[in-house]
Image (cartoon, rainbow, N blue to C red; front, side):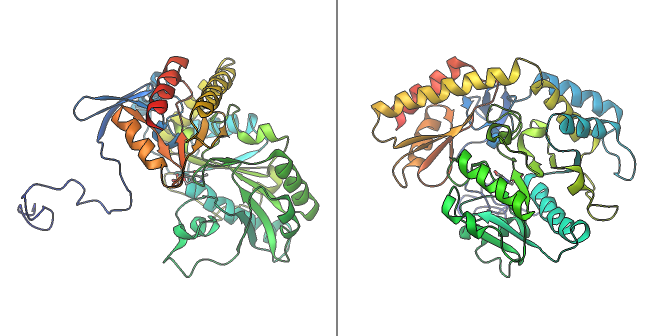
Length: 403
Ligand SMILES: Cc1ncc(COP(=O)(O)O)c(C=O)c1O
């Protein structure tokens, strides 16, 4: 039976239904209800159009409702929605093959989100240390200001206390080092360390790209001490930085890569990719997921990857990225309030005064352009990879008015 009006679900004063009430209040939502999307734009309930330079937080890399992905998922909807991973799922195998063909990894495990992909990476690192390397090592080194997810293990991997607060006792076996700090590298290999996990651009932590010299030294150190080198490409993957994966720009090959966000163009799917000698640590029963890589999600992933592998796609992203970063750099010269422009590809951030980023994002939204925060002093700009120079110009004009 539906509860009568003016009970706990309704605001006592007005008797009006509070749309937020039935939801747990875990998000600080912007005051905007989005109901439709197409390409670089979304529409609110009143029919107002917004230029979406958040891409659903780096998910809708091909824009909203991309026709080729829609067609692939629609075809799959007619065939088979779900099938247990106790059976072979051809479209999942095709996606795994394509990911293996176009990365340095050999095998893939599918899940449903970034946190799950990192959770699986943490399990794989420990299992590999025990089963393959025959050691008792278990510790994973991560970096301060990182973000790896919200499950108990991944929030522990995350190098930010605010994410961990009140969830103790946290799982043991994580240690945090300063990011981009060559001097701290000597602390990487500890008695119990089996792996490192890092983002190549810290997204949530303020859009901070890893310095190539540091990444190469870290990778070298991992090789020397036989530690797994694991990259969290949940935000940087799937073309976001101008290459399919960000690691390609660093001259290194990770042992493990995690993906989610852009992989399904909005259909939830995550993936753990690993080199064969590491992946062998997982055997039947080691890990699993009811929905992971189900036919609908895998069809979205396969269509997304196929689109991104078209010869003109990634060079086009690189051109747009250069255009955006040039535009932001020019803007920063005329606006002293912008202290720094940083990022990689179409994941860009502008550093403003402490506490000022939200005012910029709010002002831009009033002008019908959606941007994001990455901490109190960074405005994060995540256009779809299919945006245009005209849309970038429009965002830059709005930013100029708002900073
Ligand atoms: C680098 C990185 N890793 C992991 C996650 C967690 O992904 P999800 O929210 O899909 O669990 C995020 C989400 O923002 C992320 O940016």
